[in-house]
Length: 342
View 1 (cartoon, helix red, strand yellow):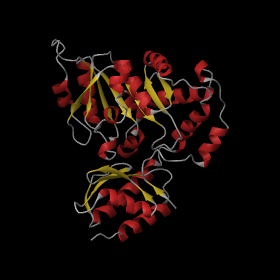
View 2 (cartoon, helix red, strand yellow):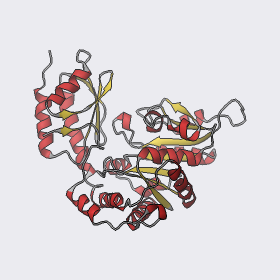
View 3 (cartoon, rainbow, N blue to C red):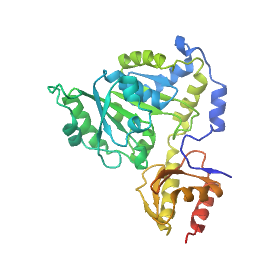
View 4 (cartoon, rainbow, N blue to C red):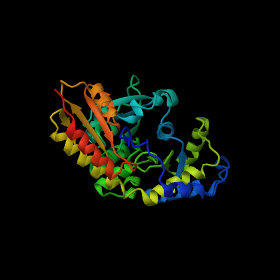
């Protein structure tokens, strides 16, 4: 029994999801003729109170198209120094949109409206790139699935409106935040110009993300998706997984959160652990003691059939998801409790 905690992207579809996929009615989506993907796009747009949505093969493509929608080459986006769009999307803002990133030194991947104001470039200064877009990530991946305070998001949204800036949400794990904070999709739909949602992380789908925005945004995004090679054919089989996940896999995210909190409590008591970051959703970030090599720690767990991610400098990550069973949690508690280091 392998306990794979590398990410919530390692999941396999549940039986119910597979059955929904096999029964999907499909067509050629490039001709806008796939009824199942159309249904998914309409459902997610309505859920968030947005005008339209578009299916993408990956969250990276959805985010990069969003950046391109809101910017022109030579302009600037503001994001946190830990932001996924900056750190883990292959330099996409520069390559795809020709824009620079101004990084905010936030707290656990999050920042304030005041910091946004301080970092907006002076549009009258010809030496500075013009700031046109603010992007945030909720939950904050590198901060261990930390959730933004929605009141601070409202403050940033107001700053964007007052300064004629677009506002994009990288909501790869937004449903984790919604469940943890007891918030609604509509609350977020009201605050952002565009939102990306990942179906293959906490929601357990095999592939796919969605970009939400106005009809004008999505019509333009359709062209950019084609330009990037994201035009697909009978993707209703994948969209059916998304529809199933929205109906059956959202509320169950609480289980992943409970599992993460339970294991974090075990790690906090372990003598070989120096620190465990605050756990709010399905991710644990923790640090081994200075005397313990983190690479060796990852190997020791792998020998016990437990797979985790080493992030360097003693920093490690576990991510809980739909394929982690109660039996796996019980086994993991025993393994962590039995580990001994000199």
